[in-house]
Image (cartoon, rainbow, N blue to C red; front, side):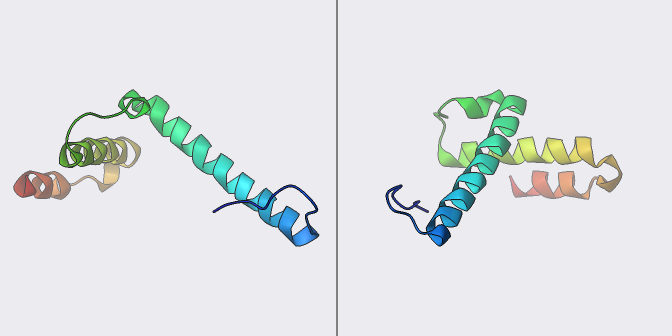
Length: 84
């Protein structure tokens, strides 16, 4: 979404620009946190899109196993190995 030009803004347009800016900061901060955790995301990935998808899935899978170990029952791992 594109913010309004900064000249002669009405109150509603200033509020809109502020909210767009705030949302963008939240997304950039979240991506920064994820990129620090998995530094492979800081560079351009050269593999095919299917390989990049697998890398992201593995990262998310590992994060879930670390954060929520009680949810892990082996069914997810079994399902993932059957689809590859």
